[in-house]
Length: 215
Image (tube, rainbow, N blue to C red; front, side, top):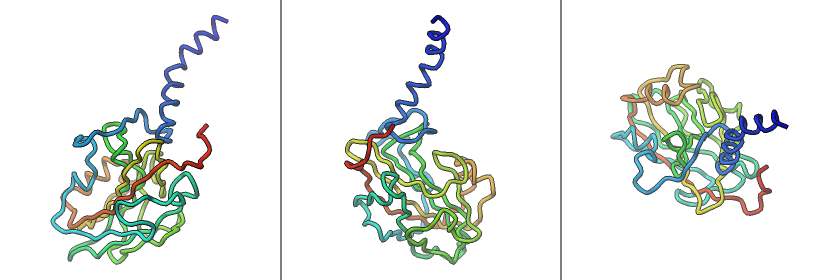
């Protein structure tokens, strides 16, 4: 009996942390909280790396500011919604994409859902339903909240008013090193000073009312 009590004491903090993570549906996120208007920690990569040029970014799945279809979320099929953007300016060598939820904050930054970098300069469209292995030749998946080299991981918005998801595209005058596959800080540091133009489309995610409760 005494040993059982000690084991419960040992694992209680971990169990409490796991329960809290269920709110964000992300086992690797750590403690998560909602951002307040104007919070510095809610700034996205696009906010932190402003560019002179602008890319017009669109998706066939929704208009900017509208709800992201459940099919494009983890609640259903997690299907990639598709993404397109206008060509970058002269000198563009590659594109990078970052998908962040800046309504939820983890480890002092917006929750990171997806990154893709070294997209060839001639590519300005990713087709809807792109398979995990269907990324453009030469490009690489970077990290998200699950770890390194992760394909598209759509929203799984917790119950409440909903979250905003920023699909950000950056035109770069460089390509990024392999280290960007596993480390977001390394990825963004390599991007600094190389962003020629950027843009985003923002989707609003809500919890699927017909989803089964998460275990």
